[in-house]
Length: 433
Image 1: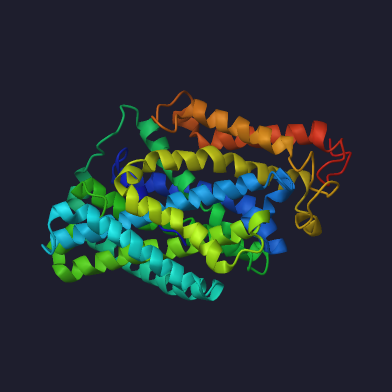
Image 2 (image 1 turned 180 degrees about the vertical axis):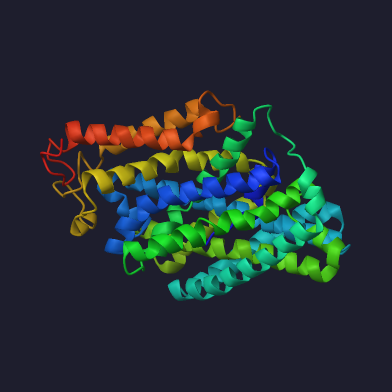
């Protein structure tokens, strides 16, 4: 449901040409979607719970609040980026059509962010019905227009694409390709905050795996090709200006509608998922739906209105932030679900708190999960600095997300088998080790 198509394609275009960029986007997205599917689908579809509730068996009936924080901050980040990019697209379209002056661009970006937040808030006041109605329409619109835009780019700019070169490529082709794969992986891992809410209505895990892998794992890289091609050929992150030159104001309007739909749908899903997650915070259990929506959308509006340029420039660091935290989180859930619990959860225990409850562990916290998260975090930062993007061997062959996930999963398994299960904590068998 979230299609950050142009920013993702833009960043891949920094390191790879069109052919290699398409390959890296598809490979990374499918790897990320595979990890995400293994982590979320079994528990969410079998028991009808969202991503946050599904994390309690690993983190404990207090430690799960850490995943609420991750969900809250990541969705605020995604939605703020969506809003800022949409504002930039609107400003660029109006400037290209000579309707406004370039020095008005920042004011337009801020106005668009504010108006979009109001629209999202009004739609979601209807709850899940409003989300479903809007998302179904927007998804069909985005896919249709996205494929049309891709066709226009490929047919009219084939020669330019064939010779276009990335602007920030290193001397190592392996490093450049892995950077593209890493961007694809972390972009899909960022779906964690949304994914449980999306798939928990599915009738069974098996019925949601193939649609997830194809509809989400392939749609993002395919639509991101629009941004990849535009950045390589035009050196701008969206193709609005080029489409105006090709077909006049009508084509520019179509491009603008595409960007609007591609960003409005994910914003709706993100705010809805955040509000659902906040409902599980003890102090917000009795909060009204209106209040939960405001808590979810006001920070997004603040970023989009007050610091749009500063936040948009940090998109690369934000992607690394996703990998730093969500790669080990997914690995912990995969290890717990398939190796330790064999896809069996105590569903009643998920809604039980307090001392002595099955997922209380030690005062509500599972040291295995917290230690595994720290191990994954340190592994990622060793391989790839999330701020400077400086890397260490063997990043150019392994990515940073995959070793981070592997380390987190192994640490979680080891501590659980050696200490947690023998201590009778976490509703595991005592003879697990």
